[in-house]
Amino acid sequence: MGVETPTTGTAAIDRDRIAELTRVEMDKLKQRIPGSRERWERGKKVMPGGVPSSFQTIDPWPVFIERGEGARVWDVDGNEYSDFHNGFGVVVVGHANPHVTAAVQAQAARGTHFAAPTQGSITVAEELQRRFKLPQWRFTNSGTESTMDAVHLARAATGRDMILKIEGSYHGHHDAVMVSVYPELEELGDRDDPRSVVYGAGYPRALTELTRAVPFNDADALESVLNKLDGQVAGLIMEPAMMNINIIPPVDGYLDRVRELCSAHGVKLIFDEVKTGCTIAPGGATERFGVDADMVTLAKATFGGYPGGAIGMTDELAELVSSGEYHQYGTFNGNPLVMAASEATLLEALTPEAYAKLEATNEKLLSGSRELIDRYGLPCYPEGMGAKGCVIFSSEPLREYRDYLSKVDGELASLAWLYHMNHGIFMTPGVEEEWTLSVAHSDDDVQRYLDAFEAFARDVTGS
Ligand SMILES: Cc1ncc(COP(=O)(O)O)c(C=O)c1O
Image (cartoon, rainbow, N blue to C red; front, top):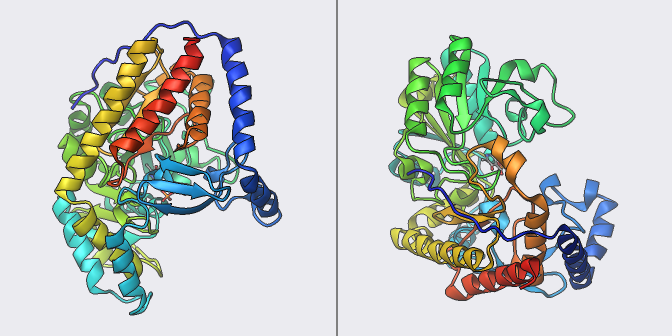
């Protein structure tokens, strides 16, 4: 599957109007969420920034959620929203999914933790083996832990230390991957020989020697870097479709060449499917794009709203784990509650029919957005697959991070977010994010999204 060339409108954007609309909508949002502000002020006294994770920091302040059911969430001020954020792409089963809730309740009544294997871990591993075609699986508690183990395993298998990643990609917050996450344009260097840039304080500068970045969708640049670093690179970690700078699909043939180049250079290929896994197809990007990696990392949607992660690996890599050469540890790995949630998610909630529905709902959302973009001549385009989608505020298609930095209109994207929030759409904050649908999303939720987007389009273009 490749990238179609999207077309966008050419409506002139009046910057003064955008600034004024942003002021008005921001004021509206503040009026709607005073209870969240109260909690945020109180939270700040005990948690840095008033939030449990820095990703939950948003302007003007975080929206505190009270409960969720199906495709809807309610905040502490009683506002009800259709949830397109879905916990950063986790709750594809829908909030309080009855299958998952029953499975977790049943397990909770039988004990929540033993640090000994249970039947659930075998059942989930068997299903992941079936979906992702990798023979062996281990569990973790998050995406960060999964990608950390995968990087370690690549090093253990090759005896090399260096890791390659894609410019502008996020794989969690362990040392090896906190390099070239969101660098500035002028920091990037040559595309055939990009500079590595550490992301934030607390990560040693020496990491830039161990982790190098390459641009996405450019197999020639990868080849040139691999030739230069021949014999030194342990692994390449990448999202097969980028999902942390909006959505950028791979161009035709790119992933096949990546696979060939990695094999030719003895480099372990790691598909980070924390976002794509079990969301864009039952077997994630591996299935959708038909290219096999040496390792697949999972978390988020695979665990139905519970904190789990997994790494799929080849038999050769599994031998390093089972022999004890590589120490893959974790008190909560394979926790029975998380396994019960995942088993119900994979076997009862995310069925083939569920995937067909997700795809159909997304198609309505993408084509509805397309229609509005055309009608109002907006300089943006819709992109998506499976449960994932977004409107990208660029008048040209994005192929990689350098495009994202130079072409995306952050002001429009931020204003669209305010319109969503003020029109009952709980939307992922951040210019770089996308929506995630759940099996509970209905035509009403789609229409609600489109109505909010139309209000935005009308006001932005002064129609
Ligand atoms: C592609 C990707 N990999 C890894 C992670 C880290 O996952 P977690 O937040 O569960 O540690 C994320 C988180 O958003 C992600 O998007």
